Image (cartoon, rainbow, N blue to C red; front, side, top):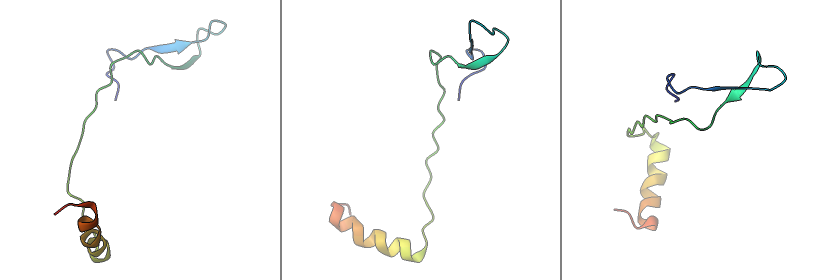
Length: 57
């Protein structure tokens, strides 16, 4: 997500009225959402088999 205060359009030199993209030199705001996934019974069974192999308890 790019904050609108720092959003900068890039224009071609020959056509200043046509934007071609946005500048990559802008701060990016990231919002992270962590939540527990809801697994189907088959997926949960596979996870239960996989965890010991990965060394997780």
